Length: 205
Image (cartoon, rainbow, N blue to C red):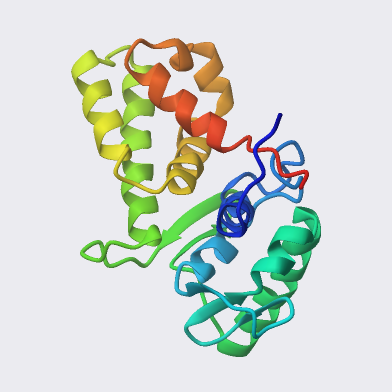
C-alpha cells in the first residue's frame, strides 16, 4: 500500500521534478524538467495558507493552499505552478544564474553566475556538478578510487537531493552509470540508489 504524501511532501516532489531531463516523461508527473524554474523557486519561501484558493507567487514567497495541494492531481498542480512561474519570471525579468545557452557551433554551453560563498540550491548545483565531473573523469580514465568515492558520497550527501539528481544526470549520465555499473559499486551504490529512488517517486495522487 502506497503511503499518502502530506501537502509539503507532495509539493516538494513536484518541485523536484524541475531537476530531471526536459523531455523525461517517465518519472514523477511525467511533465519533464526545467532547471530555470527550480532555481526561480529557490529564491522563494514556501508557505501554506488557507487564505488562498490554489497557489500564488509573490516577491518573496510561494503560497499554497494545503487542501488544494492534497486533493488536486499532481500533474494539475504542476501545470498551474508552471503557469504562475512563467508569469512571475516575465514580470520580474528573472535570469537563472545557471543556464545552458547555444554556442556558435550549435552545442550547448553552461553559463554560471554564482556566489559560491552563499549556501543556496544554485551554489550546491555548481559544487555538485564539479564533484560529478571529477568522478566522470576518474571513471573514464580508470583512476576511480575507494577514497574518492567515500569523499564524493559524503560531500554530495550534504546537498539537496534534487540538486544531486540534476548534477548526476548532466555530468555522469545514465549511459556511463550503466556501462561502469556505478550503481553496484560497494561505496557509490547505496548513495546512488538513494538518489535514483528519490527521482522515481510516484506522483499519481
